[in-house]
Image 1 (tube, rainbow, N blue to C red):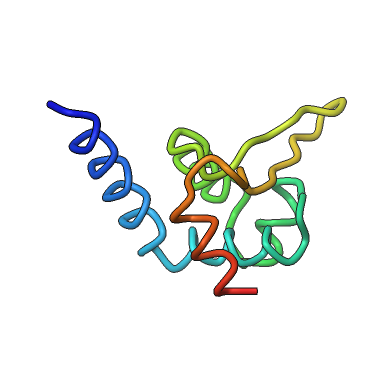
Image 2: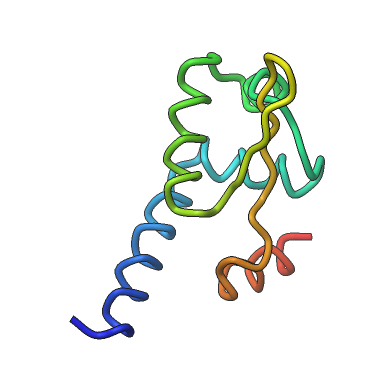
Length: 94
């Protein structure tokens, strides 16, 4: 399998992930807020903490978001620059 094929599989997974309305809502919220805790995101998209965390884990595995820990809080933000096509999409959404 070539580099092109691997990249296309990654893009396919990302687009499938963004096809979920709640995950897309997370992206839009982080685009507006830049960084937020799981609790803030869950409140904004009207989803439980557990469900929001599961969506964020999937987005993290795809390198769409990154996180940092501060005490007992986890802050998420978009991983700008990791995927050029995603950066282009985010520019359209601003």
